[in-house]
Amino acid sequence: MAESYVRATLSALRGVVTQLSLYPPGHPAVEDALGAATKAADEMVGQNGETVLTVLGDSLYLGRGLLAHASLEFNGFLRRLQSAGIDSITFAGHVSSGDLADVASLIAGRTGDLPAEGTVRLNTSSFTVSDLQSGATMSGLRRSYARSLDVLRGIGMAVGAGQEFDLSGASLVVENLLEQTLAQPGASVLLSTMKSHDEYTFYHSVNVCILSITMGRFLGMDDETLELMALGALLHDIGKLRVSAAVLQYPGRLDAEQWAEIKLHPQEGASAILAAAEPGQEIAAVVALEHHGRFDGAGYPASSANREKHLFSRLVTAADVYDALTTRRSYRRAETPQQAVNVLTQGMGAHFDPDMVRGLVALLGVYPPGSLVRMRDGSIAMVTKASRVDVPEGVRVIDTGGTRIPEPEPMQIDPGEVVEQLTSDSVGIDPASMLESMTE
Image 1: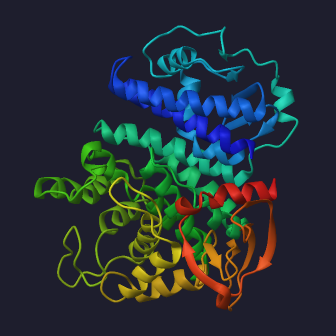
Image 2: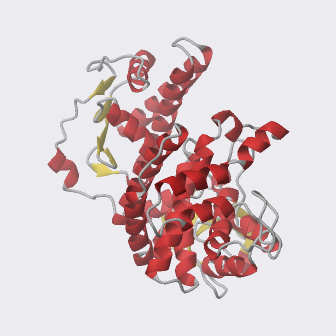
């Protein structure tokens, strides 16, 4: 489980960088984050010995080994490392908080010095490009996911600044994501369980795109139709990038002014897309405009009389709500996949198009891929492949004594033996990461 220590260290180091972007060195918030990062790095070195992390393109390596899941989970942070001129970080011995603070300051842009000595060293790795590339490489599906994140960041910067942007990059990544998703629908649905608290809108948008593609194919859409719909799915939330972070991440109930700002994001997104769209791409703006509209005509923005939401919008709305509900946010906990499905089914005919909900439920099954369930014997299993019959395929990940199983055991999950469904946060297992450990 060496990767879990790497992920904890990167998450904590990213936290220090975030605090340094807000407060000066020595501020209590910075010191608290630095203490957590130092502890995480020490534990990682204690587990792995001297630890070398290398960034190459989209990929993060531990030693010579690819960390495919972490490469996606920390995609944005890896880009920050690259922007700071960092291609490797070596952690050695008892990690000094001062050395870690120097690295964080460089990443945060507070200093231009590149530390080369001490317990945290930069760009001193002895691994060559051929060493790293001779082993595993990112799968086509993961590369498409990473490229989609990059494109969304670029669009996001333009939208946030009120500038126009080019949709050619989005069209290209949608084409690639469509190809990869249709070739590996099961793996794609599991990959769509990828979450990021720091870049929620970007990861959520890619997940909604993947779910929309798999739903669209399940409902019989051809490739040309899917590509148009997928572009709208990928861009459906870009209007949120004009909403202040303080409002988006507000932990309590929004007041009238905050809610009014949130409700503007469909129009903001639609306007931005229309300004960039080539002939034939305008439908993406319709999806952005309508994705918060209800099936019965309510929701926001208000629908004109007797105007039915576009088919693409109705499909994307179902995928959007499903992914949003299963993601932890600053203002609420994540729901289990089954709870999310229940919300959708209870809202059929009012909030949601019944046909789209039935399609999603039929596609995902009673227990969607990535679902974590407690069995009657006390063990915990993860669903790896949905079944439209009764018994989904899965793996046992935690034994009856509560111990995590190093190599998950394949099993058929009998719904009659399922006691409850659990969230990944409560179990401490990331479904997409678990899939990686099983297949690579």
